[in-house]
Image 1 (cartoon, rainbow, N blue to C red):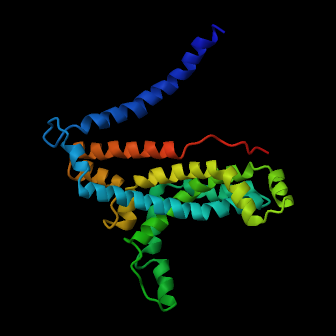
Image 2 (image 1 turned 90 degrees about the vertical axis):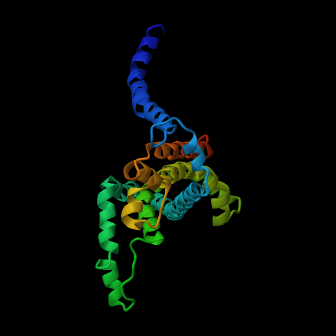
Image 3 (image 1 turned 45 degrees about the vertical axis):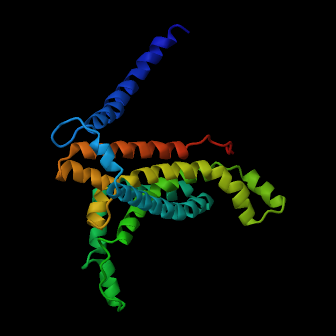
Length: 270
Protein backbone atom coordinates (compact mmCIF):
# COMPACT_ATOMS: atom_id res chain seq x y z
CA UNK A 1 0.00 0.00 0.00
CA UNK A 2 2.87 2.41 0.77
CA UNK A 3 4.34 2.01 -2.70
CA UNK A 4 1.11 2.99 -4.44
CA UNK A 5 1.06 6.57 -3.14
CA UNK A 6 4.30 7.68 -4.86
CA UNK A 7 3.12 5.98 -8.08
CA UNK A 8 -0.21 7.80 -7.94
CA UNK A 9 1.62 11.07 -7.44
CA UNK A 10 3.86 10.40 -10.45
CA UNK A 11 0.93 9.43 -12.65
CA UNK A 12 -1.06 12.49 -11.59
CA UNK A 13 1.78 14.95 -12.19
CA UNK A 14 1.34 15.35 -16.00
CA UNK A 15 -2.41 15.84 -15.58
CA UNK A 16 -1.89 18.36 -12.77
CA UNK A 17 0.73 20.24 -14.82
CA UNK A 18 -1.60 20.35 -17.84
CA UNK A 19 -4.49 21.55 -15.67
CA UNK A 20 -2.33 24.24 -14.07
CA UNK A 21 -0.68 25.55 -17.25
CA UNK A 22 -3.53 25.34 -19.76
CA UNK A 23 -6.68 25.72 -17.64
CA UNK A 24 -6.04 27.53 -14.38
CA UNK A 25 -3.22 29.84 -15.54
CA UNK A 26 -5.18 31.29 -18.52
CA UNK A 27 -8.19 31.90 -16.28
CA UNK A 28 -6.00 33.71 -13.74
CA UNK A 29 -4.50 35.86 -16.53
CA UNK A 30 -7.98 36.72 -17.87
CA UNK A 31 -9.21 37.70 -14.41
CA UNK A 32 -6.06 39.77 -13.86
CA UNK A 33 -6.45 41.77 -17.08
CA UNK A 34 -10.16 42.35 -16.42
CA UNK A 35 -9.22 44.85 -13.69
CA UNK A 36 -7.31 47.16 -16.04
CA UNK A 37 -8.56 49.90 -18.35
CA UNK A 38 -7.13 51.08 -21.68
CA UNK A 39 -4.55 53.20 -19.89
CA UNK A 40 -3.35 50.29 -17.77
CA UNK A 41 -4.85 51.58 -14.51
CA UNK A 42 -6.59 49.35 -11.99
CA UNK A 43 -10.35 49.80 -12.16
CA UNK A 44 -13.72 48.17 -11.65
CA UNK A 45 -15.25 50.11 -14.52
CA UNK A 46 -15.13 47.10 -16.84
CA UNK A 47 -17.41 45.14 -14.51
CA UNK A 48 -19.74 48.13 -14.15
CA UNK A 49 -19.87 48.54 -17.92
CA UNK A 50 -20.79 44.89 -18.38
CA UNK A 51 -24.07 45.48 -16.54
CA UNK A 52 -25.10 48.32 -18.86
CA UNK A 53 -27.94 47.83 -21.34
CA UNK A 54 -25.60 47.24 -24.29
CA UNK A 55 -23.85 44.22 -22.79
CA UNK A 56 -27.09 42.97 -21.24
CA UNK A 57 -28.69 42.86 -24.71
CA UNK A 58 -25.53 41.22 -26.06
CA UNK A 59 -25.69 38.52 -23.39
CA UNK A 60 -29.38 37.87 -24.00
CA UNK A 61 -28.73 37.68 -27.75
CA UNK A 62 -25.94 35.14 -27.19
CA UNK A 63 -28.15 32.98 -24.98
CA UNK A 64 -31.01 33.21 -27.48
CA UNK A 65 -28.92 32.05 -30.43
CA UNK A 66 -27.26 29.34 -28.31
CA UNK A 67 -30.74 28.17 -27.27
CA UNK A 68 -31.97 28.08 -30.89
CA UNK A 69 -28.90 26.15 -32.05
CA UNK A 70 -29.20 23.66 -29.18
CA UNK A 71 -32.96 23.26 -29.61
CA UNK A 72 -32.83 22.51 -33.35
CA UNK A 73 -29.78 20.28 -32.91
CA UNK A 74 -31.66 18.27 -30.27
CA UNK A 75 -34.84 18.21 -32.37
CA UNK A 76 -32.92 16.63 -35.25
CA UNK A 77 -30.44 14.53 -33.28
CA UNK A 78 -32.77 12.66 -30.94
CA UNK A 79 -34.94 10.94 -33.59
CA UNK A 80 -31.83 10.41 -35.73
CA UNK A 81 -30.02 8.69 -32.86
CA UNK A 82 -33.14 6.65 -32.09
CA UNK A 83 -33.45 5.34 -35.66
CA UNK A 84 -29.72 4.66 -35.78
CA UNK A 85 -30.05 2.26 -32.85
CA UNK A 86 -32.67 0.33 -34.85
CA UNK A 87 -30.55 -0.10 -37.97
CA UNK A 88 -28.54 -3.21 -38.74
CA UNK A 89 -25.15 -1.51 -39.11
CA UNK A 90 -25.68 1.22 -36.54
CA UNK A 91 -21.99 1.74 -35.73
CA UNK A 92 -21.22 2.28 -39.41
CA UNK A 93 -24.03 4.81 -39.83
CA UNK A 94 -22.91 6.58 -36.66
CA UNK A 95 -19.37 6.78 -38.02
CA UNK A 96 -20.63 8.29 -41.29
CA UNK A 97 -22.43 10.99 -39.30
CA UNK A 98 -19.40 11.72 -37.14
CA UNK A 99 -16.83 11.84 -39.98
CA UNK A 100 -17.82 15.40 -41.12
CA UNK A 101 -16.88 16.66 -37.65
CA UNK A 102 -13.27 15.68 -38.41
CA UNK A 103 -13.11 18.23 -41.24
CA UNK A 104 -11.64 21.60 -40.34
CA UNK A 105 -14.32 24.02 -39.17
CA UNK A 106 -13.02 26.83 -41.36
CA UNK A 107 -13.21 24.62 -44.48
CA UNK A 108 -16.82 23.67 -43.72
CA UNK A 109 -17.73 27.31 -43.14
CA UNK A 110 -16.23 28.40 -46.46
CA UNK A 111 -18.04 25.51 -48.15
CA UNK A 112 -21.35 26.92 -46.91
CA UNK A 113 -20.36 30.37 -48.12
CA UNK A 114 -20.00 28.87 -51.59
CA UNK A 115 -23.27 26.98 -51.32
CA UNK A 116 -25.32 29.89 -50.01
CA UNK A 117 -23.70 32.68 -52.01
CA UNK A 118 -25.52 34.71 -54.65
CA UNK A 119 -23.92 32.61 -57.40
CA UNK A 120 -23.98 29.38 -55.41
CA UNK A 121 -25.90 26.18 -56.29
CA UNK A 122 -28.76 26.94 -53.90
CA UNK A 123 -29.55 30.24 -55.57
CA UNK A 124 -29.03 28.62 -58.98
CA UNK A 125 -31.71 26.08 -58.04
CA UNK A 126 -34.04 28.84 -56.85
CA UNK A 127 -33.54 30.63 -60.15
CA UNK A 128 -34.37 27.42 -62.02
CA UNK A 129 -37.69 26.88 -60.24
CA UNK A 130 -38.68 30.52 -60.69
CA UNK A 131 -38.27 31.83 -57.15
CA UNK A 132 -35.29 33.99 -58.02
CA UNK A 133 -32.01 34.69 -56.30
CA UNK A 134 -32.25 35.26 -52.55
CA UNK A 135 -29.93 36.76 -49.94
CA UNK A 136 -29.26 33.65 -47.85
CA UNK A 137 -25.87 34.54 -46.44
CA UNK A 138 -25.50 37.17 -43.68
CA UNK A 139 -28.87 36.32 -42.15
CA UNK A 140 -29.99 34.83 -38.84
CA UNK A 141 -31.25 31.77 -40.71
CA UNK A 142 -27.91 31.01 -42.35
CA UNK A 143 -26.07 31.43 -39.03
CA UNK A 144 -28.39 29.09 -37.12
CA UNK A 145 -28.54 26.58 -39.99
CA UNK A 146 -24.77 26.27 -40.38
CA UNK A 147 -24.23 26.15 -36.61
CA UNK A 148 -26.82 23.39 -36.19
CA UNK A 149 -25.22 21.38 -39.00
CA UNK A 150 -21.79 21.66 -37.39
CA UNK A 151 -22.98 20.72 -33.89
CA UNK A 152 -25.36 17.87 -34.79
CA UNK A 153 -22.71 15.08 -34.57
CA UNK A 154 -21.78 16.22 -31.06
CA UNK A 155 -25.42 16.04 -30.01
CA UNK A 156 -26.12 12.68 -31.65
CA UNK A 157 -23.20 10.80 -30.08
CA UNK A 158 -24.15 11.02 -26.36
CA UNK A 159 -27.84 10.47 -27.13
CA UNK A 160 -27.01 7.44 -29.27
CA UNK A 161 -24.89 5.96 -26.48
CA UNK A 162 -27.73 6.43 -23.97
CA UNK A 163 -30.31 4.88 -26.28
CA UNK A 164 -28.04 1.99 -27.16
CA UNK A 165 -27.60 1.11 -23.48
CA UNK A 166 -31.32 0.72 -22.77
CA UNK A 167 -32.22 -2.82 -21.85
CA UNK A 168 -34.76 -4.08 -24.44
CA UNK A 169 -36.49 -6.00 -21.65
CA UNK A 170 -37.68 -2.67 -20.22
CA UNK A 171 -39.38 -1.77 -23.50
CA UNK A 172 -40.95 -5.22 -23.73
CA UNK A 173 -42.21 -4.90 -20.16
CA UNK A 174 -43.75 -1.53 -20.99
CA UNK A 175 -45.61 -3.01 -23.96
CA UNK A 176 -46.74 -6.02 -21.92
CA UNK A 177 -48.24 -3.65 -19.36
CA UNK A 178 -50.33 -2.01 -22.08
CA UNK A 179 -48.34 1.15 -22.71
CA UNK A 180 -48.47 2.58 -26.23
CA UNK A 181 -45.45 3.97 -28.08
CA UNK A 182 -45.88 7.50 -26.70
CA UNK A 183 -46.26 6.36 -23.09
CA UNK A 184 -43.24 4.06 -23.47
CA UNK A 185 -41.17 6.95 -24.76
CA UNK A 186 -42.41 9.34 -22.08
CA UNK A 187 -42.12 6.98 -19.09
CA UNK A 188 -39.22 4.71 -20.11
CA UNK A 189 -37.05 5.89 -23.01
CA UNK A 190 -36.86 9.62 -22.24
CA UNK A 191 -36.04 9.28 -18.50
CA UNK A 192 -33.34 6.70 -19.28
CA UNK A 193 -31.72 8.90 -21.94
CA UNK A 194 -31.96 12.25 -20.17
CA UNK A 195 -28.29 12.06 -19.16
CA UNK A 196 -27.30 11.69 -22.80
CA UNK A 197 -29.48 14.68 -23.66
CA UNK A 198 -27.82 16.72 -20.91
CA UNK A 199 -24.38 15.79 -22.19
CA UNK A 200 -25.43 16.77 -25.71
CA UNK A 201 -26.77 20.10 -24.46
CA UNK A 202 -23.46 20.74 -22.71
CA UNK A 203 -21.29 20.10 -25.76
CA UNK A 204 -23.55 22.20 -28.00
CA UNK A 205 -24.86 25.06 -25.86
CA UNK A 206 -21.52 25.99 -24.28
CA UNK A 207 -19.52 26.41 -27.53
CA UNK A 208 -22.57 27.94 -29.26
CA UNK A 209 -22.55 30.63 -26.58
CA UNK A 210 -19.08 31.78 -27.62
CA UNK A 211 -19.14 31.41 -31.41
CA UNK A 212 -17.29 34.07 -33.35
CA UNK A 213 -15.80 32.62 -36.55
CA UNK A 214 -19.11 31.29 -37.93
CA UNK A 215 -20.75 34.49 -36.75
CA UNK A 216 -18.32 36.59 -38.77
CA UNK A 217 -18.19 34.53 -41.95
CA UNK A 218 -21.81 33.36 -42.23
CA UNK A 219 -23.81 36.08 -40.47
CA UNK A 220 -21.53 39.04 -41.13
CA UNK A 221 -22.14 41.80 -38.58
CA UNK A 222 -25.85 41.04 -38.20
CA UNK A 223 -25.35 38.56 -35.35
CA UNK A 224 -23.26 39.64 -32.37
CA UNK A 225 -22.46 37.17 -29.59
CA UNK A 226 -20.22 37.18 -26.54
CA UNK A 227 -17.52 35.46 -28.58
CA UNK A 228 -17.72 38.16 -31.25
CA UNK A 229 -17.61 40.89 -28.59
CA UNK A 230 -14.46 39.37 -27.06
CA UNK A 231 -12.83 39.25 -30.49
CA UNK A 232 -13.71 42.91 -31.12
CA UNK A 233 -12.38 44.06 -27.76
CA UNK A 234 -9.07 42.25 -28.17
CA UNK A 235 -8.37 42.71 -31.89
CA UNK A 236 -10.25 45.86 -32.93
CA UNK A 237 -10.50 48.26 -29.99
CA UNK A 238 -7.46 46.75 -28.21
CA UNK A 239 -9.38 46.98 -24.93
CA UNK A 240 -8.00 43.87 -23.27
CA UNK A 241 -9.59 44.78 -19.95
CA UNK A 242 -13.14 44.81 -21.30
CA UNK A 243 -12.47 41.74 -23.43
CA UNK A 244 -11.18 39.90 -20.38
CA UNK A 245 -14.21 40.99 -18.34
CA UNK A 246 -16.60 39.58 -20.95
CA UNK A 247 -14.52 36.38 -20.98
CA UNK A 248 -14.78 36.14 -17.17
CA UNK A 249 -18.58 36.28 -17.33
CA UNK A 250 -18.57 33.82 -20.23
CA UNK A 251 -16.59 31.37 -18.07
CA UNK A 252 -19.08 31.88 -15.24
CA UNK A 253 -22.01 31.23 -17.59
CA UNK A 254 -20.35 28.07 -18.90
CA UNK A 255 -19.72 26.80 -15.38
CA UNK A 256 -23.35 27.41 -14.40
CA UNK A 257 -24.56 25.56 -17.48
CA UNK A 258 -22.32 22.61 -16.63
CA UNK A 259 -23.72 22.54 -13.11
CA UNK A 260 -27.31 22.72 -14.33
CA UNK A 261 -26.86 19.98 -16.93
CA UNK A 262 -24.79 17.61 -14.80
CA UNK A 263 -26.31 14.56 -13.15
CA UNK A 264 -25.69 11.02 -12.08
CA UNK A 265 -25.87 8.36 -14.75
CA UNK A 266 -28.90 6.10 -14.42
CA UNK A 267 -28.70 2.35 -14.45
CA UNK A 268 -29.66 1.55 -18.03
CA UNK A 269 -27.02 -1.04 -18.93
CA UNK A 270 -28.25 -4.03 -20.82
